[in-house]
Image 1 (cartoon, rainbow, N blue to C red):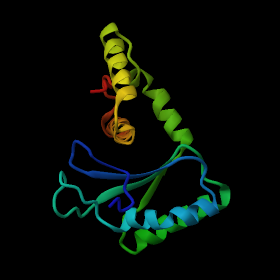
Image 2 (cartoon, helix red, strand yellow; image 1 turned 90 degrees about the vertical axis):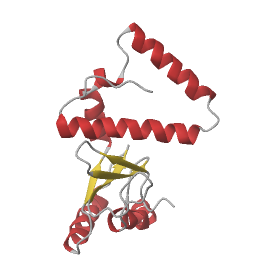
Image 3 (spheres, rainbow, N blue to C red; image 1 turned 90 degrees about the horizontal axis):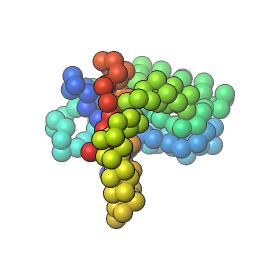
Image 4 (cartoon, one colour; image 1 turned 120 degrees about the vertical axis):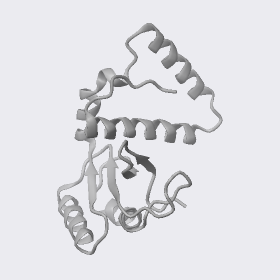
Length: 164
């Protein structure tokens, strides 16, 4: 059961970060379609075998590779404030321009620049092309990428991102 969390990550301080990932622009219609998932994201504690049995606090993020339409941007802001006032986790948002800025800022951290890196990157992409579970692999890539971004925000840029 997803409970509104596509990705769950833990930073170096043990803080849990939960992400709901969406593709494309979010307008009022889309917001209405995804709101129950966002409710779960901010209201239900994350559950996973690698987490403590009871997680009291976590950061909740709605991430889209699109944008928020003007009317829904205010709705989402008011929603986040109302949830926070009721004692739930505040909703944080990350949109396309922030993703582009983070990837651009950390470009050297994501792309192979040395021969060994290129070989590893080539092996990794070949493995990805031959995988029998592309959804799982895509989830792994997304999880690692978001963890790198979150770590970069928390402590400065990591030296290098190398797919495993």
